[in-house]
Image (cartoon, rainbow, N blue to C red; front, top):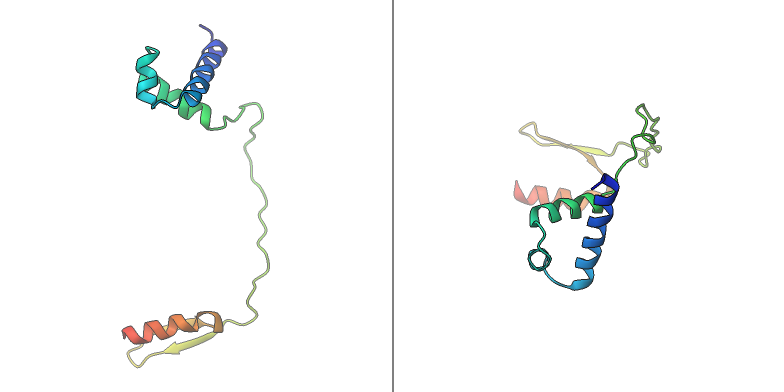
Length: 102
């Protein structure tokens, strides 16, 4: 059996299984298939395969959007030296929760 024939065979088996509403082990037992091979092919056919000819190694330029914050926020320094920084109106409730725990 060629590689292409094997691919087609397992595609047909997976399609039949999906329409059968049987569990995978029950389907394999009914059709005299190896459950381990069935599981392998189910995973292999479910994940898109990259064509080696289409893939190219290299680097891609990544740009980050400008920062959304216009100011660094406030810093609260406690008497024991612990500093909590980056406090803003959006996370002020978090500060309250932290202070209640201290």
